[in-house]
Every structure is written in structure tokens, then in C-alpha cells.
Length: 241
Image (tube, rainbow, N blue to C red; front, side, top):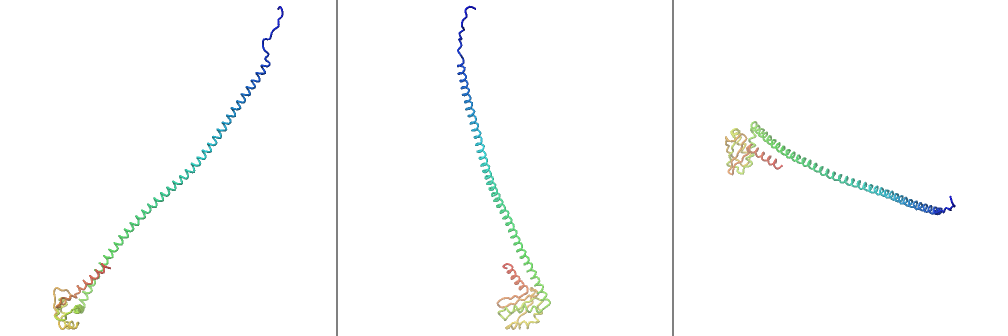
């Protein structure tokens, strides 16, 4: 309507600005890409470092565990050896104590048996001695009863011990006096130097008794006296044998 007017383009051409804007976007995108790559690289490096740390930690842990296991085994072996040694020593000394106890008991038993055996033998010897003496008395008594000549042997033994041959008195039992009087001459002839002897019957004497009185003392060769002398000899042997 009216006179035409030219329309003035008040907007600037955006062809160049668009180009600049794209480059900036691209540059920004590139920068963003580089930053992302850098971040990813850092993350990857951190991840690799983490994995390496984990691996090294695991390796070190395994080494420590292995060393601990070896040390534990050594300690166990040492304790076992110590325990074995302690147990062995304890058992050894306990065994020695038990063995010594048995040895002591055996020694005491042996000593008891030895003492008992010695006492038994001593008692047996004394009993045997008494039996021998009793048997001898019986045998001699029977011999004197049955063999009247036996009394002459006792008289002869007494006369052999006489230092003085004169003034002799022979005392015998009443059981033997008659036989002695009958054999007075034989008695005087038994020992040289005897010309006479007085014969006396002594009621205090038993059969087989023979006592000769001399100026220097009496000589007793009675059976009982001789048996007592034999008994003394046997007892001395028993005590000192």
C-alpha cells in the first residue's frame, strides 16, 4: 500500500558465527573428550595401581602366612620335643624311683630272709647240739649200765692227770663202788707210782662219777663233767663259727 519500501535486514549474517560456534563446540567437545580420556586414564591407572596393590598385598599376606606357618610348625616341633624330653625325663626319673623302691624292698626282704635263715640255722644248731648231748648222755649211761668196765676208763683218765701219786682218795657213786673195790689192784696198776688208793662211796654222786682227791686238789673226770665240757666247746664253736 503506498510507496514500496525496502526492508532492511537488521539481523547479521549467522553463517560465520555458526562456523565459529561449531568450532567452539567441537573444541569444547574435544576438550571434553580429552578430559574424559584423562579421567578414564587416571581411573584405569588407579584401577591398575589398586590391582597391583591388592596383588602385592595378597602376595605379602601369603608370604607372611607361609612364614607364620613355618614358624608355627617349628614352634610346635620344639614344644613337642620339649614335651617329649620333659615326658621322657619325668618317666625316666619316675622309673628310677620305682626301680629303686623295688630294689630297696628286695634288699630288705633279702636281709630279713638272711637274718631269719641265720636265726633258723642257729636255732637248729642249738637243737641239734642238745639232741647230740642228750643222745651222748643216754648212750654213755647205757654203756655204764651195761659195761661196768667203762667206769675204769674214767678212773684211768683221772689218775693220768694226778701230779701226786700218794695219799689219793677215789670217790665214786654207790652204783659203782662195789665194782671199783673189786678192781682196786687193777686201778693201782693203771698208773706207775701209785701203790695204794682209798675208795669212798659218795651218795651225792651219780653213776659214772669219778672224783680223785689229791693233796693239791680234786680231779673230776665224771661223765657229767666231761659232757659239760663238750657242751661248752660246741657252744663256743656255734658263737664263733
